[in-house]
Length: 160
Ligand SMILES: [Zn+2]
Image: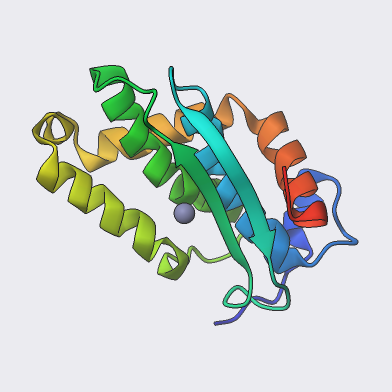
């Protein structure tokens, strides 16, 4: 995979040139999930963490969510799906600004959970994937300063 312009993510954010660019890329993806899920009623974020450096394969990130307080409403069902694709949506927004090539290999788990939700939870089938992805994109573009700020912090400290 050719990634010749690793500094471009920091250029886009306007900060973070001191950070491992791979950490910054994965951090943007994870904060994408976070921004959508954190806004849902009854949902509690229990952990956001990032480890590793040096390559996209070495850096691991996760957002842990406690869904037990969330009701099975259309809002939460929709938000769960939007949050699942928000990592990918964050990747796409970054790539539009950096000219980097979109790489979905890190989204396999997200896509798996997305398909499973639509399979197991009938109300989830009322939205198309394009709609869900567009909603994720809109949510992130409306929160771009926070996406940048939290991604910088997560990449720098490994925590939020
Ligand atoms: Zn993800």
